[in-house]
Amino acid sequence: MRDIIDVKGASGAVYRFTRFRDGNPLSAMGGNYIYAREEAGGSVIVHAGEAQNLLTGAALDWDRAVREHAADGLFTRLNISEAVRRREHADIINAGPLPMNPLAPTEPT
Image 1: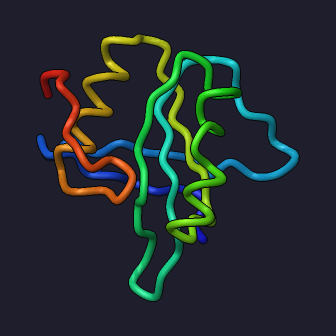
Image 2 (image 1 turned 60 degrees about the vertical axis):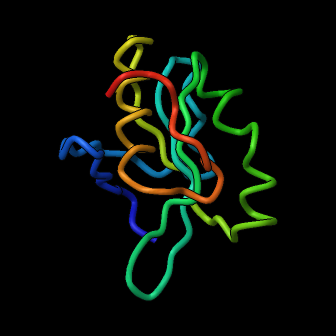
């Protein structure tokens, strides 16, 4: 699996995420995160989220993502501005259905 994933939002904006690797602690800062799995055609995103604290927030649904969707990569994007985080999160989800994000967020894109 790659260490960097560029995710295109519904607006056409591209957001760069970096893979979390064992030994590199997750940041306690706010940011966006995605869970992905590697397939022959590339990475498939199964969940997009945002958290005030990536250290705790990014791990909340990880076990479910692994169990139900074969996720094998956690990627993060630091972003301390809550308003910007929510807009980016909405933009990513509105780009297409993600298995663990069945409903579009109510935040404007």
